[in-house]
Amino acid sequence: MGSTTHVSAQDKGKGKARTTSTSSSSSSSSSSSSSSSPSSCSSPSLERGSYVCVHCNRRVLSLYVTYSDPSNTSLLQCASCGHLLDVYMTLAFPVLLVDLLLSKPRVYRHLLTNRGSNDPKERECQRTESTFRIGAIVVGLDALIRCTNVGPPESLHPVSLYLRVLGYCLFETFSLYACIALSAVFFRTFSRTSKSAPLSRLRLLPLTLFYTSLPTLFLLFIVSLIWREEYSVPSSPLSPAAHLDLPTLLAPIFIPLLGGLPSGDDGFVKRVSWLSRENLKSGVSTFGNVRGWANEALLRKGVGGSSAVVGVAVLFNASQSRTVLILVVAWLLHLFTLHLMDPYVS
Image (cartoon, rainbow, N blue to C red; front, side, top):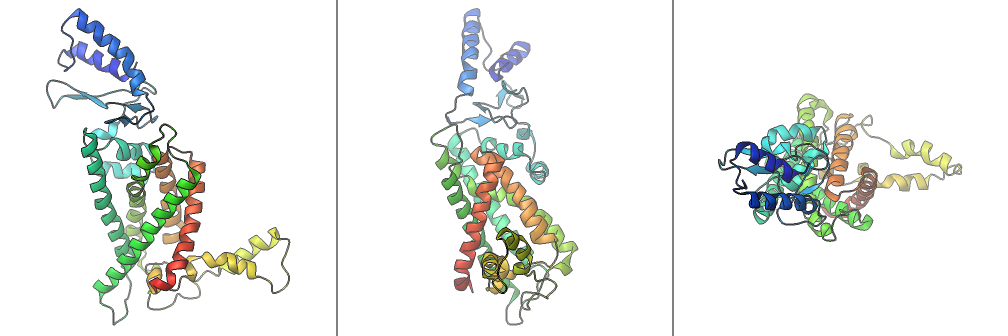
C-alpha cells in the first residue's frame, strides 16, 4: 500500500485527520486521489517540497501526516519498500552522528534532501546556512588538530600559527572540492532521474563533503589527544624513520610491470612519486603530519575516503564503483594542484 493509502487508514481509525471525508461522495473522491497519488510520488521530476525514502530513494511528496492536533503526527510508510520514509525526522542531530560514523547512506539522504522546513525555499536557505556553519566547524577543527602538540618557531605566535594553518586548510579543502566537482562533471554521474539534477546536486557538494569529514575529524581529534607523540614538530624536519622513501617503495611495483629498467634508470619511478605530499616544500603543508598509521594511512585516507564514497554516491545517485573512480581522479588532480600552488604557498 502507498503512503497516501496509509494516511487514509489513519484517518478512518481516528477521525481526526485534516483530510477526513465527510460524505460518501468525498470518500470516493479521496479514493480516486489515493489511486493517482502513487504515480505522483514516483514522478522522476524534482518537484517543490519533494522528499525521498531514506531506504530505497523513492521520491515522495510528504514524509508524515499531521492531524487536527499539531503535536499529533504520524510517519508514512514507503509504497516501494514498506519501511518508514524517514525515521531520522524524529531524532536529534547528535544521534545522526553515530550513523555518520558508520557511513550509512540513509543518513545522507535525510541530511541532503529531507532535513529542514516544509517550505522548499526556506529549506534551501537552511541548507546554505548549514553549509557555512558546518564548514566553519570542519575547517576550524581541522586547523586546530594540525596545530595540536606542535611546537611553533619562537618567532611565530600561536595565534599567527593557527591563522596560517587555517588559511592553508581553507585552500586545501576548497581546492579538493573543486577537483571533485570537475571530476564529477567529467564523468557525468549525476542523478539519472532529472535533466536538472546536475546543477541542483552540485550546489550540495560542499555540504555533502563537510558531512563526510565529520567522522574523520572526530576520530582525528581523539587520536591527537591519545597519541600526541605521533605528531611531528613542523619547525624541524621529519626524522628518517618517519620519512617514507616513495621511489624505494614504488620501484618493486613499477619495475616488474615495465619489464625491468636499465641500471641507474629509475627516473620514471621518481617522476611517478613526485606527486606525493612528501615533496611539498611549504612548511605549513606539513603541520600536523604524523609519523604513524593514525592520521594519513587509516583515518584521512581510510575513514575519510569511505565516508566520501558513500556521501558522494548518495548525492549523485551513482554506483559506488563509479564514485570511487571519480574520487581517485579528483584526488590525483588535487595533488597536482597542491604541487602547482606550492611555491606560492611557500
